Image 1 (cartoon, protein in one colour):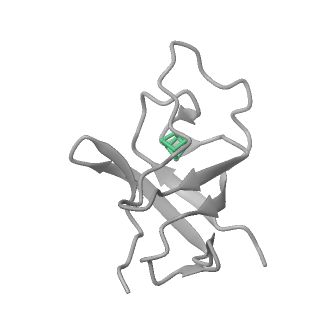
Image 2: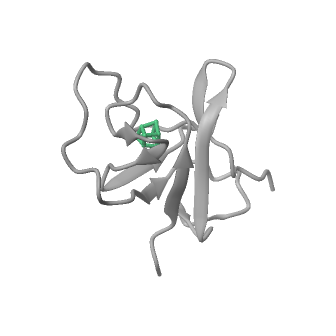
Length: 94
Ligand code: SF4
């Protein structure tokens, strides 16, 4: 299975974000209630690796159609704010 890519992220204050791209090696989405980005890191510094594009290493939001066995099967996702929370905007309820 190929890792889903994070094609865009609007959470520009996150340490992994430059130019609306996520450069974490892999992110984790979700908790039991919402599809939030669980890798969000608000810090004063920024990641040194701005060449890579993050994948979705794990997704705990089993109420999403793309979630199969706690993994994301979507080819790519986008992340952004829903209210005050950084969420997976590709979340599709079952
Ligand atoms: S996807 Fe998550 S970890 Fe990556 S830049 Fe956005 S908020 Fe940060």
